[in-house]
Image (cartoon, rainbow, N blue to C red):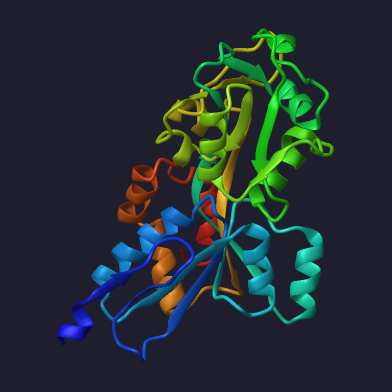
Length: 290
């Protein structure tokens, strides 16, 4: 019984496990944006359910979705929606990907804390990352080149920003980083830098300024830290954060996801710096009995 009461937690990229060896292992893989959040959810869930075993690893949303398609994980974490090609591949492999929203994010644009720029339009962010705006003086800042920091192409955040903001290709001069934390460190060390990170990381970061963003010139600029503005849809770069499973969740997988969606699980979401699920996504989750 002493062995059953012990909890072993190994952080990002390794396995979190607890309980009897005979228990079903829930393999979670994917988004680096929510890896810390899901690890915390798993830790608390296993403390309350000593027979549970949950492995949480990152690698990016694309990696997680590919693992689900190839039956190499139970749950795929994703910070973007699955695309048509991935659905086709899943169907061809006998996998029916079902989407569940576990949290809400306000994707945050950050600059070095010594930069005088405090706000940008959504259009300007896109032009900067396409490489069309190259100097901070073009957006009211100091006369110095803009250095781009972003994610690798397997990242859901990379894909989300490209589709929703750039609507084109990233500049080949962008520095591709492995995760949110690397972007923060890059921006802190580079006075000319701009980066994009999840709100859960932005709230905890030091040495960077979180920019206010407006939809277009003449409209008020909104901070991603303003929860009411984010939840009401006024912040222009917000997104749901997903978990994908094969078919309708059941058994231990359903029990874990129900915990994530419970008041206690949603408090963990808020404690990790993200936002609780808006009502419209709660309704979508309900079709799975969640």
